[in-house]
Length: 325
Image (cartoon, helix red, strand yellow):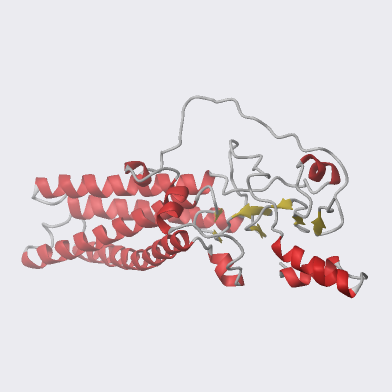
């Protein structure tokens, strides 16, 4: 995206030097239209990205959780002689695993904040009733009017509001509408990974003190192989998801997405305080609903309002400036 100075030079090409300096100061004060003007037309529809790599990664994620479930239940908990230990740890592990998979499903099937496609027409811009002096940006790839802080994703083939990054493990972009579910997914995966590592350590200690044939329903070599693979999986996912969780929380608190930090697009908007940004990302003031991937779900079908996009030819310019009166 061009800087204000570059945009000024494009607008003022061919005009007088004195007029260029005056308009340059005005162009630096103008901001792109906000997301409140351009809304997502697919907010209530089912969202799924048909990307082969993303689908494979999402399936692998679920299979790894199911593998951990198998080893924890059939190798460590069910053969245990301590019934209380098995019930408590089994309930805790299964609850965290269920919340992790539910968060993964919500992050994958929630519209991250896609901008309506192909609405960069003269008729649509006129229908927005923008104020004189405002600047409108068109995405040359999906031919949509880009709100402020929106970026184009080459995998989703859409412009996404407050796009942080595209994650193949959830087969979706992490954006304005699904960042909460991605944060919950990384948090719950990190928790079950830590819980799994603790149970593996205790199981190894118990098996060393007792007979290996009595501490598992599998043979000792098979038990060791299954536990080592589970330990490797738990350690790898604990490190990865902990880093991702910390990165996402930091992005929310600083009101700066990963792609904005990477491109150096800082200081172009008024940043909000950390606590206010957290409430915005999680959709409500602090409550237990922050930890629930089911908040916002409703069985009732509410009537949806579809914003009619005027038909017309796509404009050629990538930067459109509303004329001053």
